[in-house]
Amino acid sequence: MQKKRLSYYVFFSIVLIGTITLSITSFLWIGNIYQTYQREAQRIQENYTNEVKDELKNRVDTIVSLINYRKATTEARLQKNIQSRVLELNGLMTYLYESNRDKLPDSDIKKLITEAVRGMRFNDGRGYYFIDTLQGDVILYPVAPSTEGSNLFYLQDERGNYSLQQEIQLVNKHGKGFIEGYWTLPGEDTQKDHKKITYVHKFAPYDWYFGTGEYLDITTREVQEEIKSYINQLSYGDDGKQYVFIHDFEGNELANGRFPELIGQNHYEMTMSPKVQYIDRQIEIASTAPHHGFLTHLWPNFSNGNTSNKLTYIAAIPSWGWAIGSGANMEDLNNAISRHQNELYNQLISGIQKALLLAAGIFILSVIAARYVSKKMNASIKLFTRNLETSSAQLSLIDEGKVIYQEFEELAKASNNTTQRINTLLHKDELTGLFNRRYINVLFDSLLQQAKKDDSNFSLIMLDIDHFKRINDTYGHPFGDQVLMNIAQCIATEVSTKGYVGRFGGEEMMVLLPNYNAEQAFEIAMQIKTCVEQIRLPGQDFSVSISGGISSGTNATTFELIQQADSKLYCAKNNGRNRIER
Ligand SMILES: Nc1nc2c(ncn2[C@@H]2O[C@H](COP(=O)(O)OP(=O)(O)OP(=O)(O)O)[C@@H](O)[C@H]2O)c(=O)[nH]1
Image (cartoon, rainbow, N blue to C red; front, side, top):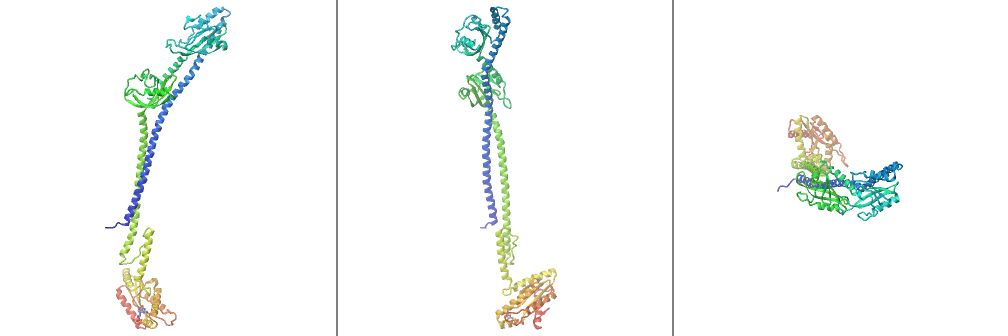
């Protein structure tokens, strides 16, 4: 099975890890966004419902507060009203008395006053004044003149209070004041007594007192009517379709800000579909402490004949037997909540889209990064592969600057060290350190080719140690090796960067001088010869010498150049050695 490339694994590892990390992160992120959405949606529902509840409650509570205020002030208002009337009457009658007391006898003045007061009516004719004596005799009682002249000292109200006695006692003590009594209302159920407040004031000239009274319930009813007509005019909400209603604890509609046709109807008797079943609950809330609360119920929509779900707040005025309420259409409420939630949902979707877009972007970037890393890796590995593939033909070094990653650089360094060592072993002569014959021949071929191509100079020096056999024979082979090394050192130093030096045979050396003509080569050869002559070996007083032959030019082959140089070398040997021939 063909094995996968390392870069393939690197690429897929990065992409896989990136994808998994991204998936988990995106999953958690989106999960978080979704949870926030759910919490927020829940919060909106609660907030909005609470807002609507608050609005309904405030609306009803405001009216309840108004009623309570009006209730609290009704009795005071009534008292003030009757008091001011009686004081005014007393003032008037005192004036009448003062103006006539010198002109008329008391009996005439009394008559004058009685008749003047008889005609005085107020509160739509309902209100009247009475005059009694401090003994309980009735002087004036315009609503029942038949009682005039009689003594009602022992008159009791519906609850057994001696009303006149209380009045007389008060007048005698303070000259004026309020008295409470309980009486049936004219023309009403006699079983029911009603609170009546009376104000009495002594009429100083006689043993009389004036008085007038008013039923608290009547004033209360007036206040109730005012409140009902106030409520009938009220409308709420953006579309003005919300309203406040009042019904009593028997289910009778007393006021309605939107559907006046319901006023006077009883909810139990109203023909509506579905049957109104919530009234019991509504009355229960109103009639039991704390006398207020919310309820949800079905309610007929009188505008379109359908039924709708409503949220209603009910608060009661228990002493009046009133339930005051206001409701909101649940569909409107739910629609508003849905609208808010939809906005939020759209925000959620756009948040998720952005998250996915970002994730896709990061994914693409990770793929690009993975590809980049694997490509770079591949490129470095290819450098090694190519280097190894060509190493059978040529041992070249890997360009360390071209590989990326520290590991590859270390690998390239190690490989280059090995290559250099192998190169040394392959190209150099072990003893002298000069290029060996095989490699100097390779160099010779390529340098000559290059010189031919460049049409430049080229020279070859063939050098041979003189009488080396004798040295070997006399001093031994190791000593000969030492001499050989010294001479090689001399040649390498003199040639230096000018050319290349190789050991061609046992004690024969070859010097390649690209860009040098024969004359220049001769000079170099002479310098070498001089250097060799100066070699002194420790403990020995003899000198060594070297002979050389030079060939130049680029028209000949390597073989021909070697032959020519060799032949000059032969000449040098024949001509006495320690010579250079060209
Ligand atoms: N010590 C040592 N001797 C070597 C080495 N290679 C070749 N020789 C010796 O070099 C000598 C070459 O001798 P010849 O060819 O007769 O030449 P020569 O004695 O130098 O005389 P001419 O060249 O005529 O001056 C031989 O004795 C070889 O054994 C080597 O690596 N080390």
